Length: 284
Image 1: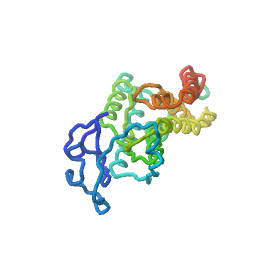
Image 2: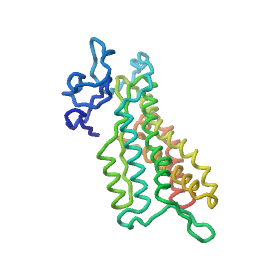
Image 3: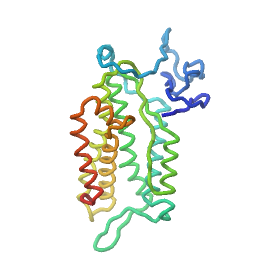
Image 4: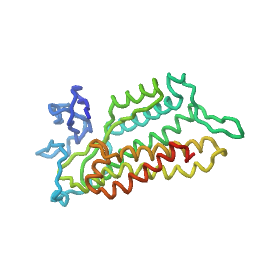
C-alpha cells in the first residue's frame, strides 16, 4: 500500500518510520534532521541505522539475536488508530441505514409480539464503534503486539484513501468496503513460522471478540440493544476472521497457509461454516 511522507507529502510504497517522533517519511526525509524531527533526539546513538525493511530468513539465525520490543505507541500511531476507529463507526452507521439508494431508511431492530422495535442512530453509532470498529482496530494491534514480542518494531498506519472509500461506499450504496489501515513491521530475519503466527494473531483476535458477543444473542426480545450488539459483534468479527484467512497474497491467510496448511484449514473451514450459518439465517 502507498503512504504519504509526513514532511513533503510524496507517495512512498516503502515508508520509513522515525524512531523518535513516530512519523512516516520518504527516503529523502527519513533522517531526523531531514524532516525537522520534534522527537527526543537525546537518546540517538552516534551511528544510526535507518533500514526499515522486513526480510525473510527461514534459517532463524536472527531470531535468537532479537529481544522483545517495548509496547510503545507514537503520537501519530495513536492519532491514526482513533481516526480509523471513528471513521469505521461512522461508515457502518451510514451503511446500516442503507445509504442514498435506500433513502437512509434502514434501522437496527427486532420484531417483538408482531411489532418492530428499533434503535436510534446514536445507539447504532456506539454499537458500530464497540462491535465492528473494535474488531478492526484490535485485529491490527494484535499483529503489532506479537511482532514486538518477536523483537520487531511495528506501528499501525491508517490509509486515508481506504477510509474515504469506506465512507463513500457506505453513503452511496449502503455497503462498506473497509480498508482502514495496516500494521507495518520493521526488522530483519523473520522466519516463516514467526510470520505465520504474527498473521494468525489478527483473525484469532476477531474470533475471541465474536465469542464474547455471542451469548448476547440469547436476549432476543428482551433487550434489542444487547441483542443487536451480540449479532453485530459476533457476525462481523467471524466474517473479518474468515475474510482475512483467505489464502490471498495480501491477506493473513496467505502467510498462515505458507507456514502451516493444517492450521490454516483447521481454522478457515469452520469459519466458513459459521459465516454461512449467519448468512442463511440459521443464527440470529
